[in-house]
Length: 435
Image 1 (spheres, rainbow, N blue to C red):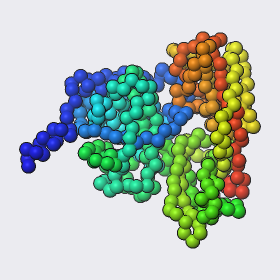
Image 2 (cartoon, rainbow, N blue to C red):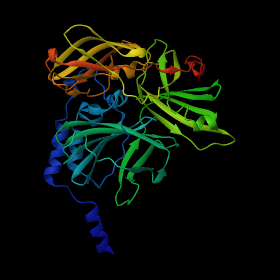
Image 3 (tube, helix red, strand yellow):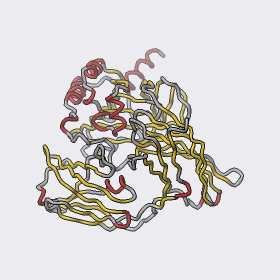
Image 4 (tube, rainbow, N blue to C red):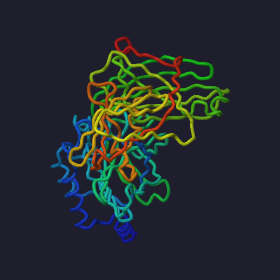
């Protein structure tokens, strides 16, 4: 039995070659630093993806741990590819540094850090892959355990960005509806087979402030119970429940329900993620619980307004609007929803930055519905999502890692319908009154 166990450990936990270990160290030493990017640049990609990760064997590399200790905070995977909340948490020292490596099918994944402030759990990683496609397809189905307990009610999303050929940095976030402790071991393993697992330490850091709302807003066939609003260092979280008739639920009438958060200064908060659910009908009604995350706020405003709205379910091909950039202010009409006015285009070190204002009903969706084309019609999408310029409510920046002659590229957007705001379900929370 001892001989069999030794062989099993050897097969499941192989050592990486010295060259791979050294490349991992060089990768972190060469991660692009923030100073090479716009100071308004943030890390949430325009296309949020649902991540599921399938890993091979895991082990700890002392050499990598030594490398991590010498890394400046802005050299981390979180700082390189994380959203503005994750970056803020990293800068405030709320992360737990790791050095956990796994290998699967010739790909090496190094978990660099975890971050947990009471909201979502964030995990950073760097991956070396033999794949040649722009976005590697190494992500598959997995399950989550906390201190050995299987967690079923989880939402998972994330972001990955290419560093160079064969090297990627990424983050993924886990939203857990169950109560979890302040310090725990997060275990990730495949749903099938379970021939491996990786365990990552997670510790709660940072303070948060919670406001109990306990307010209900109703319309004919839907009630929203607003439970609480919580301000974490890395996000603003709203907790709510939806109550609707069984027939309304199965008609999918509110399947496209979403929310805007607006502070007392008229600033629309950047949406990060959201999700939830529940069981089937009971007594002819359905009750589902949801959590939605938005950008962090510091200092806190005097009030927050939550504005539910329905997105249009339009399956038709959207109409594209094209305008050639000619070095002067340019308006991009976006239909009923509003318009974008491009004020300037700046090129620095091979990166194009659009500076523009957005007027309309859905600022972040409008701000991200922009891409460029060169003179041959080749499409280029932004590196990450649009960033609101600090101190401005509707001024944004969008970056493209492509060096194009400004007189040669065309700006593109699409015509969109305005969202259907449900005024009767709207609520304003006075933060000076609620506790």
